[in-house]
Length: 99
Image (tube, rainbow, N blue to C red; front, side):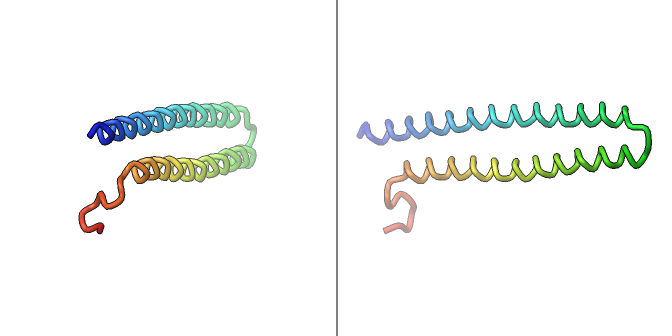
């Protein structure tokens, strides 16, 4: 009987560790986004013409798009890890209708 509570406790601990790592990753991500926009503001204030400003903005917009794509991959990977941990912790036949 003690195997089930231990398994649940272990799963909770593993999920907590996964969530904590995800939180650290996303905090770093927020910091990098703030740096990106701060750099953009600095670069834009130093431009001398509209075409130059548009070029700077285009460069930073492309970087932001790349960051968004990386965000999607990161989120997918985190969700996959959580789903794997839960699935691995489930005994066979744990869902109604499984026989």
